[in-house]
Length: 110
Image (cartoon, rainbow, N blue to C red; front, top):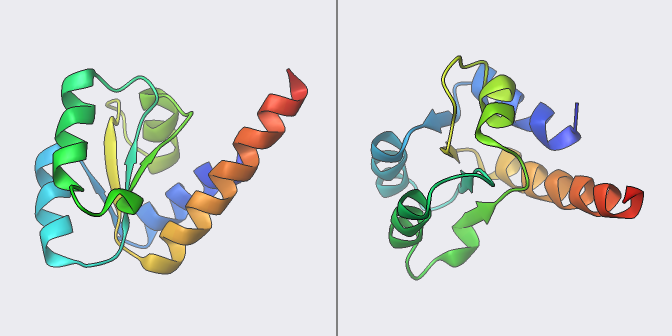
């Protein structure tokens, strides 16, 4: 498993992960920090909504190379996950760094 997916699972186990557009929007209103994670295969409508949720704070949105199924597996969910909000700044930063590293390593393999 990629390191980033490990951090996503850790956030879920720590109770710092919010799943779903409505719940993510509510959680983001309560917190200044954190990171909204969008799946690679999220619909355009979902991505537009994520963009509106992070308007003016684009650094809070991270479009991953992971599918909805991969995000769901890492978060321990049965249903696909298009949007997830990591509500802990440390875990959010660790996830972003690990996802970037995972993406670079994947590109090198190809």
